[in-house]
Amino acid sequence: MGIKERVEQHPIISLLILAIPVSTFVAGVGEYFCRQRIDIANQKSELRINTLESELTSIRRGMGESNFLDIRTFVYPKDRLALLKVNPKSKFVSEENFYAILDLPGW
Image (cartoon, rainbow, N blue to C red; front, side, top):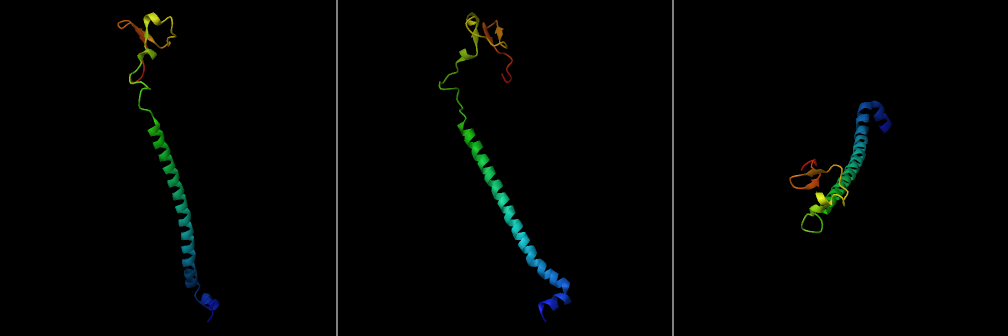
């Protein structure tokens, strides 16, 4: 009995026997492409994490080159008002005799 006769006598069993290797092949190809997509996503996330970590470490946590804060850059005495351009948002603090921006958020 040849293959043709067996297939004609038992078509359902023949289809099942043929379906097993075909489904195995399709599953293998699908798994390969899924692994490729996962690897690409992992590489992108590692690159993003490395980029963010390098940006975070490059932030300078000081107040410049000196060890003190020069308040002359944001406080104006009343007598120097004519020499400097005062920010329009600045207000004069009469008790302390200087101009400053008083409505800064977080201060």
